[in-house]
Amino acid sequence: SLSLAVASFGLFVPSPRFVEPLIALSLVWVGVENVVRKELRGRWRLTLAFGLIHGFGFAGALRELQVPRDRLPLALLCFNGGVEVGQLMVLAVVLPALLWAHRWKGFELRGVPGLSLGVAAAGAVWFVLHVIG
Image 1 (cartoon, rainbow, N blue to C red):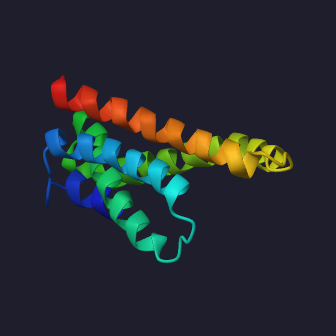
Image 2 (tube, helix red, strand yellow):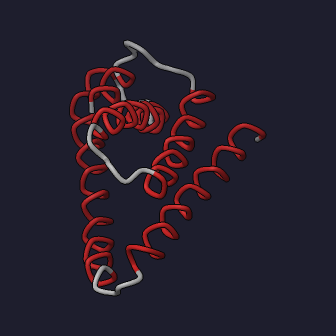
């Protein structure tokens, strides 16, 4: 929300040429980290940094709507609320599926790494598409 607001009000607007590949690389990082790192203490710091980067990405989408400055606070509130609701909707589907899958003995050994590497692969493809395209 912080970087979304900062960029939406034009206080600091990093180029999408840098933000979009960084978002993709954050997905690669998290996917790989889920496989190779067992201790996740302190992960909140990385999550905070990635959240700031993702906020700049969302701000780019909001800026494309060219909302008049006097309507920006309400638009920002609604846009951010929509993003949060969207994340909760995804979580509402994914969390029960993961809890169900966790009952399978092999899920921790094969399922988690497989899904994590899938996230990393999607991020890598997204990164390449943004860098070359």
